[in-house]
Length: 321
Image 1 (cartoon, one colour):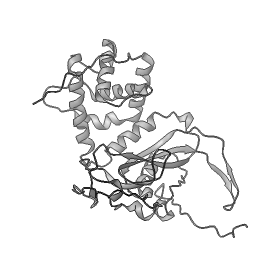
Image 2 (tube, rainbow, N blue to C red; image 1 turned 45 degrees about the vertical axis):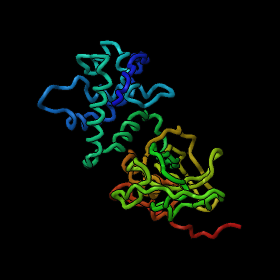
Image 3 (cartoon, rainbow, N blue to C red; image 1 turned 135 degrees about the vertical axis):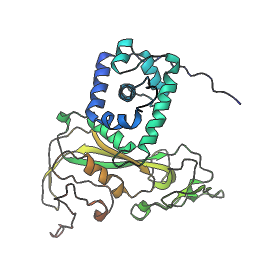
């Protein structure tokens, strides 16, 4: 049995007082610690030396750096590079640089179990969106409109076979435009199916959550099927102040293009159902948001409040020539 070489937990970037204050403010404003701490902290036994709040703040400090890597070893290096006063302010006790990664790893695994336990309102998507919303200052929330777009994220699991042979069994296959597969002279090896998931769709890799979907072409690759996820991003957009619902629109001033909500779903998930519910939850205003996702109106028309609803309808005015 080959053992893993010891991890290098040194060389972290020193944490400035500004970065620590900024990261602490984001985590505290989000309120996720108040929800997660009772689920993670045990009343009996020896208390952990790394607090939930301290671990999340350390992750946020690591995320503030440009071109950062969201790896636990990088967070461990951040913790080891802190001063004793900074670690004490985060609730760290009996600090041992050689044990930082193992302690963070145990806490991360327990956090993953809590987020995947199926508790109402407690999930990885809830936690990520809550922290992301807390990082946006109120002065940058100038409009109620958002623009939604999605991008493909390939799975880390290896696909055994050709990607063009996977079955597009998701809900999105009935609504999105699918290009014809490119012609090839070599024989096509059918992708291996590892089984079926709880949603009844095929599993093509050891990544049990990844699904098959279709993606559009880019400069580096053609359009076609892939296995993985689709990341839906909702960015703040300009409000529509007035429109004649035919060919004239008056928009508000330019708005900061901050991401107010996002959703990572298996590839092939219906795009209207993938993020609309998250947009309703993330909305902090009483006004209604209109999104464009390239899907039929019936799939993305949802009430933003219990007492109000909206529905997209075709214009009664005739089209101008």
